Image (cartoon, rainbow, N blue to C red):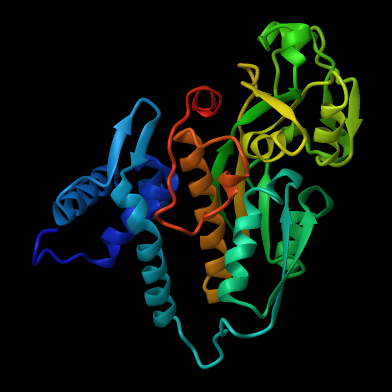
Length: 339
């Protein structure tokens, strides 16, 4: 580290935002800065630490091991500093009792949000959480009325003057089958997927823009089975020849529990955009802000591990809050999970 080269808070904001988004351009847009200014900020950080905090790959910008170690201490430090600036006599304490209602997609409950709950109750033991399926709520109406505190919204971007949206991830899909499916039906090629009998979540409870988009001339896009809950899918797939398309973290979560194989998705499956949405009245609330930070950290850590080829087992969802948790590539798994 270069002695005497002090950092200001704006440089730390640049570091956190680039780490969270994985894009200089997107970070600049969300910070309200120009791209050259963000790039210059990264240059100053590299000079300060004596080495770059990010490197470019064919998949975009990825953090270095040093950045992985710095992100959580810097994020927590910024949270403490900014919370101190907004302290009022009636400000919320982390020790207070509080009930928070959140809407989530089914597949996000055991993956993205489980690590959040683990850390939430370490820091705020008085907080209780109610999780509501996102398709059962009118997100705009309930956030505006105050009956909903936070939404993990999948689908079209919500545009409302009283609501704030933050892009979390463009979720990637994976195809899951029972063990040995390929031995009986051949490799999971796009053509094999087209011919396969499929199971999907029922259309009435899933918004149209959440459904996977296929080309218009698919010969067998109509599913053989529709279910109302995502958790039905792995059990059905494990005990039949049906094929399902699910989010990659969910596929990793269920593959060993149910004895499933994971395959690359069909090439025309579009990523599912996930947004975090909340009302402006909650923007400066320290407990609400920390909850949002935890959600972003969970998503970013899962994405980092999948890109590095983390082994396909439950360990992917452990040690999210340990900055020194290892993440090493594996051969076949890295091919499935690579961007």
